[in-house]
Image (cartoon, one colour):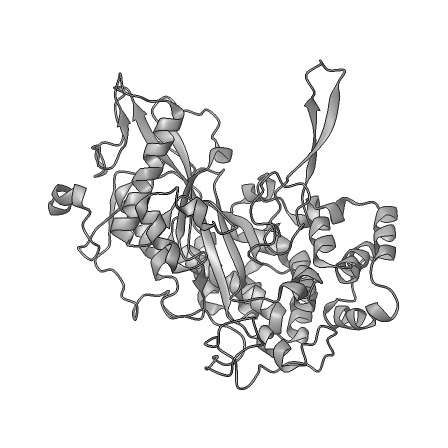
Amino acid sequence: MATETEVITSWPSTSTSPWSQPPPLFGPSLPAGPAPPTGQAPSSSPVPETLPSMPPERDPLGLDSWAGQYYKTIPITYGVELQFFIPVIIGDKPDPHNSDGRTDDRFVRRFKAGEDSRPETVVNQVINDIVVALRIVSQVETWTYPGPPYPKRAVVEAMDQEAQSILRGGAYSQWVVEAAPALALRRDRFSDIYTWVAVKVKSSKRNSTIEGHFDPIAKVIFTLRWAFRLRLPSTTSLSVHVGELTRDIDSYETCPVWFRRFCTLWWFIETHIFLLSHWRRRRNGKCLPLTQHSVLKRMSDEELARELEKGHQGASFAHLYEQMHYIMPSAITKRERDEVEFIWRAKDAKTLCQKLLVHKVELVNMGFGNDFLAMNHVEGRGSLGFQGFCEGADAYSSRKNNDGETGTIEFRSMDGSLDPELIYHWVTLLIRLYDISRRGKTSDIMGIIARTQNSYGALPLMRDLGLHEQHAFFEAAMNSPDKGETMDNIILPRVVDNGMLPVPPWDQACHAS
C-alpha cells in the first residue's frame, strides 16, 4: 500500500553501511606510488606495486610499458542518473494519498485556482524544490547546469550564488537536477488526479576505490523519498556512466584493446544482462538491445563484408587478431564471427561506436504537404551509450553535450529505481564487467563467452564474476512478483527521518511530529 510508511531506524554510518566499501576489483588494492606520466594525472593517483596476474600478451598501444600498466589499473569512476516523476495538484482536486505523511505544501506542490500554473512555472517550482532539498537536507553540492562539457566561468556567473560557490569543487563534483520532458507520460487513469513533472537527478562523479563512495547517493535517495512523492513508471530508467579517473584521450580515440574486449563481451552477455530488469525493458525505445537493433546487427552480409575490408588489414591486424581469438568461442556461426571480427578490425573508436549505435530514420514534412517529405536521421537509444567515450561516437545525436567529454560508457538496461540497495549492487556488477575487460584474464572472459552459447543467465554470470553478494540479491529480486501500478502503489512508500539528517528550516513542525 502506498499509504504505508517505511521506517529507517538508523542511518548507516560510513563504516557500517553495506555500500561503504569499494566494490571488489580484480587484483590487489592500489597503494600510493610514483607519479603517472607527465600531464596525465595528479601525483596522488594510486599506482600498484604489483599488477594482477595477466596472460602474456603484446600490445601495440604500449600496455607493456610502465605507463601502459598505470592506465590499466587506474581507479574506476561512475555516476548514476535517477529518473522519476513528481505529482503536482492543480486546482481543488482531492488528494487520494492524504495519509502518507506528505499531504501539505511542504511535500506536495499545489497550484490553486488563480495561481500561475503554466507548465514552465510548475516545472521550475518543482526543480527548485528538489535543488533546495538536496543542498540543505542531503548536503550535496547541487545545481541545474546539465553538462557536460563542464561550464565556463561566464556561464556560472549567470547562476545563483550557491551554484557559483560550488564551482571550486572541480569538474563533475556537483549533482545536477533538470527537467526531463522526453520522459513524458501518455495519458492514463492517474492523469485526472495529478499533473506529472518528469525529473532527472545526476550524481557527482564517484571514485569506486574510495571508502563510502556510494553513501552520498544513498543519502540523496533517502532525501527524495522522505520529502517528495515519487512515481517510477516504465518510461523511467536507471542510467549508470562508468569510466576511469583519468584517461589518455589519444588511446581512447584509437580504440584500446580493452574497449574492443568489452564490446565483444557485451555482445554475448547482453541478452543475459536484460534478465535482471523487467521484460518490457527489451522493448523500450530508450534501451534497445544492440544485438537486435544496432547498425552492426542490421547490416546485410554484403555490407558487413565491405566494412571488414575497410578495417585493419595485414600486419596492423595481426596483434588484434591474436587478441580476438583469445576470447572468441569456436562454436559460433559465420555471421556472429564476422560481427565480432568487425569489433576488432574497426579503424578507431569512433567507427566502432557508430556501428554499435541504435539510430532510426524519420520522415519529416517540409511544410509543403505529403509530396515533400525528407528523411531525417535521429538519435536512437541502445542498451549502451558511447556518446561520452570519444568524439563523434554518435553522429546523429540531437544533443550537443558530452561529445567525448567524459570518456564514459553509459549503461541503460535497468529499470528506473530509487532503491539504494538495488542501485549499489547494479553499479557493482557494471564496474566488474568494465574492470574484467581492462585487466581480467582473457581465459576467464573466454570462459564466460563460451557459456553464453548454452543455457546460461544473469545469475550464473554473477557467480562466474565472483559477485556472490550481488548474486544473492538479484536472485531474491527476480523471484519477487511484479504487481504493476495501482492506486495503492503508484506513489513510492515514504521513508521517515530518524533524526540523523539535518532538519530543513521550512520543516521544523514535520520533524517534530
